[in-house]
Image 1 (cartoon, rainbow, N blue to C red):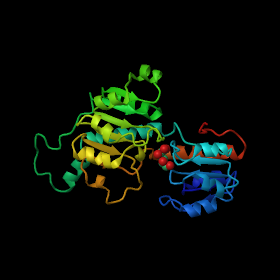
Image 2 (image 1 turned 180 degrees about the horizontal axis):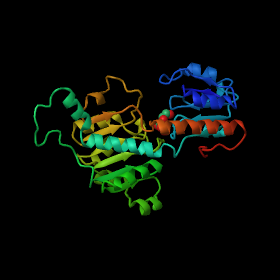
Image 3 (image 1 turned 135 degrees about the vertical axis):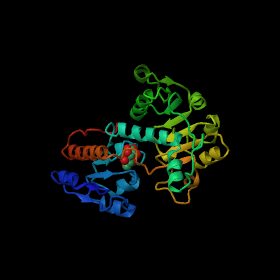
Image 4 (image 1 turned 90 degrees about the vertical axis):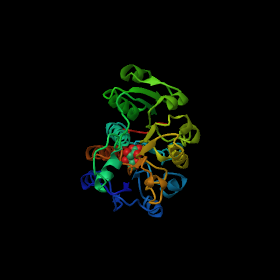
Length: 317
Ligand code: 8YV
């Protein structure tokens, strides 16, 4: 088993019970591509993150590969069709990260709405000299209309949280979700209606050719000028230059992003100079408990594949 990122010893020890293990020695630095390809040569399983692209070149470099075990629910780093054509099993980590990711999205929404980053900086910079009636006045979340783009498990978990805030919850998804409509009192809208009606637009969708760049010049124009975009999907959902322009032109109010197009963000990215944009470093599923559960699921998937059993959470064809 080739593990492309350093993981806690307790998990590596588990893998050692059923296989030889080769672990990359850094938690924060991804394996250089060449190194990853070289060390994949003898691998039966690779445990990957979004940093490892699984494509034709990878498969050429990994003749013994049986499983690609992704430490993420998303799998846009993997050519799924190619893997399946080669008879390679792909697994991801659904469910275990749903609530934690929704929680981060919710945190971002409240943080942006109530201008918390600006407020903390205001205090730390010694600007707090007196009280003012509209000092750092933000936007209410309670009672607002929230549009969720992508009503999968994370979208549903987000909708559940919004109920406690008395929000009207709209959603857009490639298929209608009758169960969610009944249980969570969420209403389906076309994309245009969702954009036009929402005070907050929340992206929880997976990145696919259909969803790539969905937030762009045209869609920003349809949003309210007071709207805030929250993205816990993928950076690729947003055309970043269009977002900057939309905020500058006051077509929307701001954005709070867990993901950006090129991660890590470069320090000269315009987002970092904009009060109306908050960026956090792709920490949606990053609670200790959830990360432990994700890694454990990867270990279990690897074990099942090596032992010739069906994996726990395969990505279906
Ligand atoms: C991962 C994520 O931790 O699950 C996903 O799709 O984006 C995160 O939870 C991250 O992508 C590392 O692979």
